[in-house]
Image (cartoon, rainbow, N blue to C red; front, top):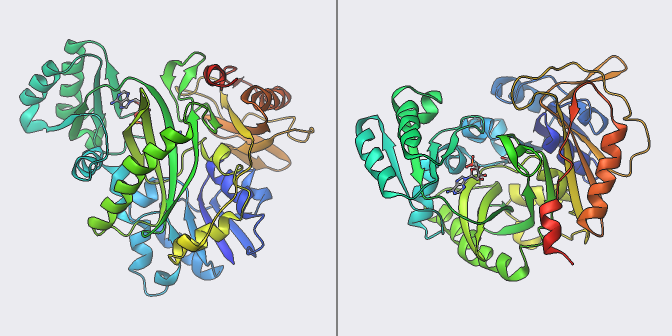
Length: 428
Ligand code: AMP
Ligand code: GLY
């Protein structure tokens, strides 16, 4: 088979690394990819939203399956574009159509979906320009902190959590009246703040049946001890020690099953990954959000833990034979530590020469934002690497990643040295 992966981050490198090991694979292409994915297949310099160029590539390289990494092309309708094309329509796209991608593309849609299909989530209401005053009243009815969410995609920045009512009202006005997040905040979801500890559960579905993949916890804040600004993710751990079988059974019964049934009931033929962001509220799962793709950096721990052929599972998603497939897991803990560029998530510099990649690493070094220039690998993003290691304990796994993190050198390197630390309290 010839496979195309769309995207250029650590998630796509982890996918490429895994799919490159499949016996079913002939040729692997990654568009646009990064310096790391170039070792797993052929990078093609095409943007993930350039559907016409993707179409030509698929045609030219006789691609048999397309795996979409990020949410943007899904929300923009890449899967629908394939289905509407006489030549492309037979080629499976792993990732939902526009309708299913609304689970991530519109917070209002996903909240309505959860309410309608009985999926536990925070109480909420949605407001637009013409009912700002009602939004103020709703805020007054809630206890702090206040959670404000731009309805549409806002590059991961559209959620505000505010402790002060006056500030919350001002931000609501900012979002609705002054387009703080552009068109994405034309609608704003205000919701009850959930207390608990977060984790993510990943589901792969062919629209009929599903497989629950390993759960993971990510570390979103830039600073140690979960302080400072939100990032795309600074590290991840899988499995999650506080998500025991009893909790995961509740997630399957109360969240996964009604979600899959709800999609079917809505006539949404969803084929791809569902990323379920959950709060464990005293042992009760509540959904914070859905994403229509895998997480980054969660993919860098979830996918390496899968022993079986991932491509075989994806083929099953494409032709709706997933129910007949099974997969095995590596029974160790995987941790990933993300190395970023100094300044990230605010202003940062790119183009820094990376050294130490060729040293022996007891880890998988996934490239998150790099490019090849001649013989050099240069940093090319805020998140530069995601270093994944296995261990019998979180401590053991994360220490291997820290050792690798020390060997890799570039100007302005920064990483959190407390990845997994909070979880050690849950293990013996
Ligand atoms: P999101 O962009 O939806 O992932 O939200 C960003 C982060 O805000 C989440 O990962 C949570 O940490 C936090 N968050 C979102 N909604 C809530 C909520 N209702 N209660 C508490 N924290 C929340
Ligand atoms: N790590 C969070 C995300 O991929 O959205």
